[in-house]
Length: 218
Image: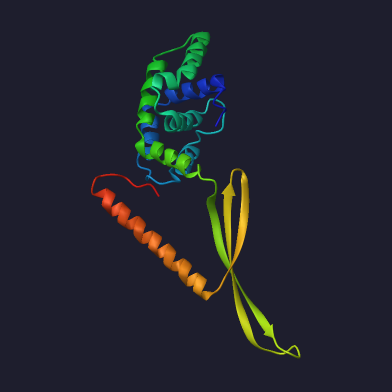
C-alpha cells in the first residue's frame, strides 16, 4: 500500500476505485462482506484483491480499498469527510487538471461509505491492532524430542533419557526470538491440560456472548 502521506498517489488509486463498474465493485464488496470475523481476516482481504489484480500497480483500486479499511479501523472516531479530506482534495485537483469528472466524486464518496460499513473486516483490523499492542506475540512452536544414553561406569549403558525441548518463537517489535525450554513428560501433560482448559474457556465465552448477538474474534 502506498504511503498514506502521498495523497497524490492515493488519489489515483481512489479514482481507479470510482471508475470500477457497478458490477465489479459489487462483486468485490460481496466477497469482502462474506469474509469471517477472525484475527487474520485482513490477510484474506489482500487475497481477494490480488485475485482480481487490483493491487500494487499505478492507479490500483485495491490499494485504496485497503487504505480506507485501515484508516477507518485506526481512526474511525473521525467523520469520514475529515478522515479522507486530503485525498479527496487531491482527487478534485487531478480531475480538474484532466478536465473530467462524470460523477466520480459522488461515486467515490458512496464507495468509501460502503467500505466503512464492512464491520467484519474493520473489526478484524482493529483486533489485530489490539493484539500487536502486547510486548510479545506468539509466532510458532514445536517440541524437539531426543533420546540420550545414560552412561554408567566403564562407559556402558543400560538406559536412555528422553529429552523434550519446547521451542517457542515470539515477536517483540521487529525482532523474532526463539526460546528453548526443557520439559519432562509431566511438564508436557501439564501444558496439554492448560491448553485444553484455555480452549474450553474460549468456547464458554463464545457461547455466553453469542446469546446476546456479540461476535468474538479469534
